[in-house]
Image 1 (cartoon, rainbow, N blue to C red):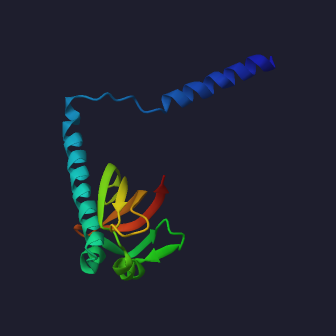
Image 2 (cartoon, one colour):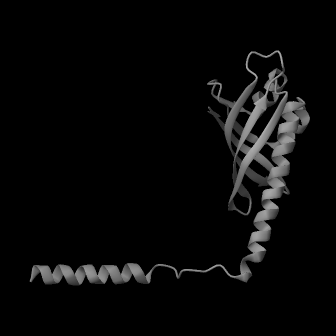
Image 3 (tube, rainbow, N blue to C red):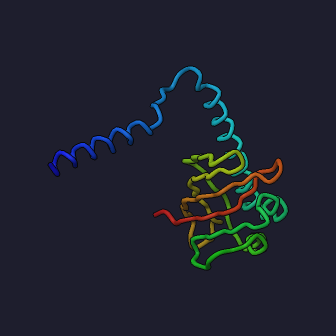
Length: 160
């Protein structure tokens, strides 16, 4: 009797669980607007991140600062901990990025005003530097403030 009762309960729970799952959707021709929007978002962030790295390379405090949200937090792979917007801008003059290469960018929209972007950067340092190249994996959280996208959080990890 117990076995029969357990079997009935299991059947009921299974049928309830399956009835609450959303129907599977298939990709159709109607997905073209979504693909175009995603492509446009990818291109926009690729442009913004290239401008970010140009500002770093050129030690352009104004351009770099304009990209950061007021409550920005950044964590670099140097082990010195978190930096706020003012600290990040002020240490820009101490950077020695001679050139850089960006690749592997992936944009994940988290809502209409938020996106998470991951990518890799290979930094090249001046010819007389002890360290000539460094690769880092970067995650950036971008938020839309008014009509402008700003970096809210930056995190980098050294890649061997």
